[in-house]
Image 1 (cartoon, rainbow, N blue to C red):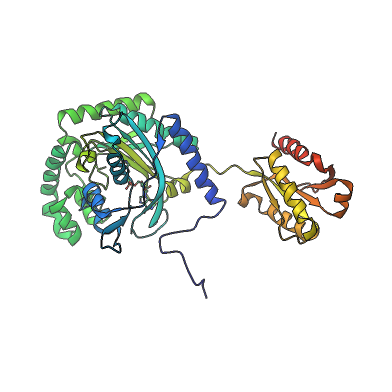
Image 2: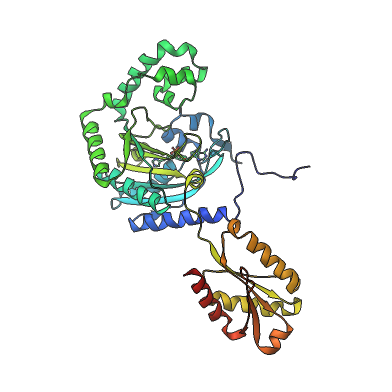
Length: 434
Ligand code: HAM
């Protein structure tokens, strides 16, 4: 019989050491983004359903079939956010920041919810690290955001990633493109599903999100967004390409990239990692110059991206740094208080080590068995096998004012004066690291 309760399909539990990789990626994000002047914004997971319909778009897959939407006890329709750009824009307008000093630079991290078919790298609850830059209409917005993105990806150890780049133009040029696309697809639509035929009518760009081979085949040789750009959007796109080249950011033009959300104007981009089995994107973003106004704020240009944290970590070459480890083992329950005190003292001296007490006070023999089991599991637990110690504390030690330190990889044993153990461990751990 399986466990009585199981995680909801498409959600998952993350334990150490995987949770430490999440924390480390988030720490690096915080460091890189704050060094570029971005501050963290935290917005609710729950938003009014209407917000996503108005921003992401009524006819997108996300809004049409992937949202967790429910009525609350007063009958208000609420949705667990499927993405966070809409929520951040809502928050910025609500707080009056959209009419404040510009540029406004924000980043966020947190869970998002989409009712998708779960598979590797695709979950119903997943986390995103995202960035939104408000108030910059020129291509220097793209340049800043993409430079910062690459600084972050490099800090995680990625080297050979490339941006797929396109421009979807303004709402007018998009409408002209949509019309041409409809003309191209309608004669081939008999092979499409009902849902995809509906998209031809309502929002032909959304056909690019389809995985149906019939649709993919029909899209070959279809009109391209770039052929419908107005002059200003074309110049903007050229400027983005020039600035990315100057920044040394590798990119490829992808004329079929339109992104699965309706709020984009002009620049859209994605990064796909070859390290991930499926060709799912690790991150995506773009410019959304009309969204702030559409959600009741002033006319304010903006650009941003969101990284799928789960996918990022599945592909990321970095691993959390292995830690030093000390297990303080009391001889019996009588020495437990003293062991707790000693552990606190040791933590002061070796703040980057993981210092544990054998709280079960099961004696030296079983305590050492536990220490050795942790030593065996060091790679999985992300502990540094060369920097692991057990510290034994019993009647004899207490009487002599000493403790017994054991280095777990060599089983070498040393008597150390109790009031010197912190310093002794700090020195030994530093030597072992060098
Ligand atoms: P998005 O492309 O819908 O864009 O999502 C961004 C990233 O979230 C994807 O590239 C992917 O890595 C991750 N992601 C999406 N769905 C799932 C899933 N079911 N499981 C795991 N990861 C997933 C946005 O969300 C926009 N808000 C990005 C943006 C910000 N545009 C401008 N500013």
